Image (cartoon, rainbow, N blue to C red; front, side):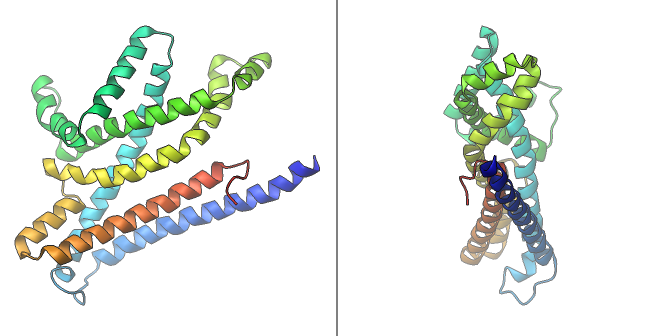
Length: 262
């Protein structure tokens, strides 16, 4: 009991630090976008006169990552559960989905969703941003599914037996006992997938989404100055991945109730 009492202040302190890290990283990202949206004539050309354009492209990149990241987790959970389902049809559908997505290039998937799906399904009328979100979500969802499935398999069977002995229904057993532990185990690979998604969102330029890479290409084509433009684009991606990693690491520490992270 005394050991358990000593753990709580440490866990509470760690959660407070994690919350502070998340808040600081989020505010840093907002500050960067705000600074870029203000006139920056003091910066060398062609960056200074195009700072607002870079800010808009960065905003679109963040929106793509956020939307596709949330949808990708939901798709990953559903695919992981389907792959572990007792129904052979669900297992086949989930296995085929993961096999196809992981075995084909993301660029082909983006182009397929934007150009081919409307031909196959005439009612499918999505813009470039929405199509990019769908393609990125399906892609990261397949990788998330394998991470979540591994997390579900890592939960000891004794947890399920204990929940059943307490009279919990299968639904509450999964929601309250199994999934929280599996999600915590799956969190590190999910974080890696999110960072990879941020960088992979650059492929949305292929269907005309005006995100950071597309903005850089347009400015480079107009000014014929590839070095400063590409360095700026790379620096912005580096800032975004750093902020995303800090937020994700803070979330991971917040779930770390056993105290692996000190």
